[in-house]
Length: 159
Image (cartoon, rainbow, N blue to C red; front, side):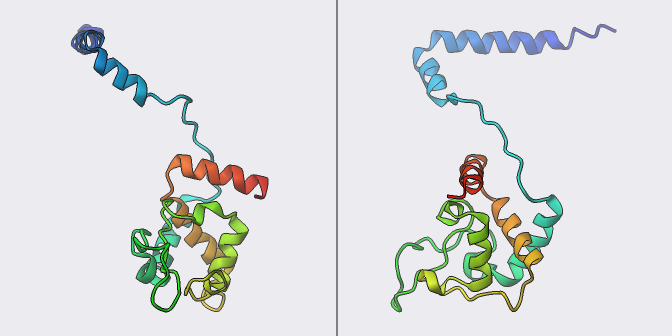
């Protein structure tokens, strides 16, 4: 039994693929445009997988009615409704939640969004601090790595 033999077809296919790229200037240019300019390095997240699991259940119970079960929120979240209130924003990293440091996110869940122009009620009488952190962990688990990295830098700088 030869250990190196199964690698020969794989190496041949790779070389053929590389040769094909070299013959197509358009394919090479597209590949260069898609290549990241700097390596994507993961940032350690502040929460655990257990918090994310607990947060999912809590989010579905307390938040999903307004922010949608997948945290996608309202598509028109920047436009005030007929009552002048802002609709629930997405919490999945596509709206403004990631612009706020963790203490502000916690306060918003605890105190609500009314002071900010929204209609979100406060949850201080329904959720304890750990439950709020669990919900925020679940929310942030939906943020793409580049969004979380930007938030993490901002959160550490206190801005």
